[in-house]
Image 1 (cartoon, rainbow, N blue to C red):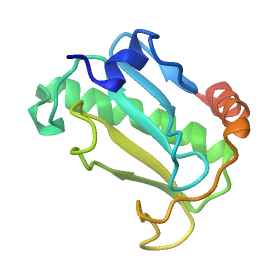
Image 2: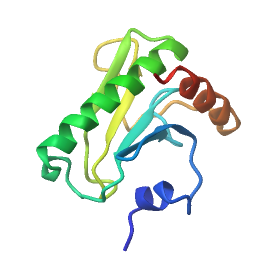
Image 3: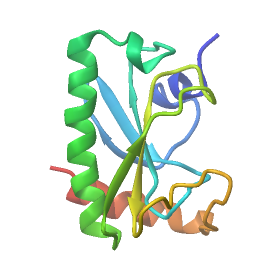
Image 4: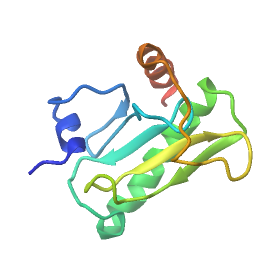
Length: 130
């Protein structure tokens, strides 16, 4: 059975896409920890991030770096944090989260972001993606 991310990749489920190439897709998390919270997902459906082939794992980090740079240009923050949780969806992915202070990534206390604002946020970040 395809993961929710595989369904997003093929367009079966809509997303607020920021960037995409032949190997990866980046889109806004619809239940963000912070405004601009983005998921970066390899298009190859592999459950565990550390099961990714070395080259793909390296490319995931390089693609994520470019996405993070775009987020920083749009969302005011000190820096972008990265985390891999790996249990909520059986498809490797990383979370890129704008940070303002140490220790602020708390997935239990999510920021209330107006869902109607997500398309504009995604569009602005996508415009900065280089």
